Image (spheres, rainbow, N blue to C red):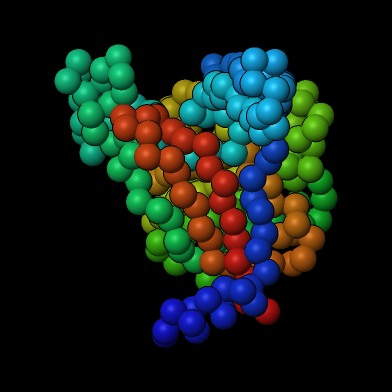
Amino acid sequence: MSTTDLLGALRGARVYDLEQPRYAGAPTFPAHEPGVLLHLHRRHELDPINPGERRTSASALLVMAEHSGTHMDALCHQAEGLELHGGVKVDASVQTPYGFTTLGIDEVAPMIARGVLLDVPAAVGRALEPGHAITAGELQAAAEGVELRAGDVVLVRTGAGALWVDRPAYEAGPGVGADGSSWLAGLRPLAVGADNLAWDAPGLRDPGLGTLPGHTLLIVRAGIHIIESLYLEELAADGVREMLFVCLPLKLRGGTGSPVRPIALISP
């Protein structure tokens, strides 16, 4: 396909923005407060010393946690028994004051892959209760009629994304249970993502894996990235199940994660 043909195909595609808005006070996992802070440090003001200068400018200082808003987890984000994915031991040569020397978010290539939406509330025929842990069976029901392939990006809609402006309700929303994460890991996706705060159901503690079991199963054991706080409502409303998924993490050297602005493209 020529460049002209490619541009033509892309111009005709419907683009879905999958990022939630970022602002101070937006939902944030407690360990990652304050999330996002943006303050102007240069304002539009006329210069009294140079009255002939009509141009003005403004700029802001941005302070943002890696794991705030819509973001991707790097493989160094989680460890089990002080070992990262692939058995990399966490020691001073790997974990430095300035980030990780391996498995950082800077090692993640731009993601351009087939995406699949699993709309769990639609599959089970009801809204999911706060704290509900989505089971493997519920994910399988949501996947009925669509093939899940290795290398896909699997997006799980819990329904929490519609509650973003209501922080307590959003943070109390449902998530994926340990058996659901285990089932997905077995499919070997490139990444998984969800529209809730932290992929796992809030407060979930697995007897064998402890807290955030999906993070251990997916990131540490399987080497699968997790994308959190996605906006999936428009995709679900339009009945989209398959898409071209594009996600570009920032190249933060040694970072444990990155804010992202993922998009989904659908051919006309």
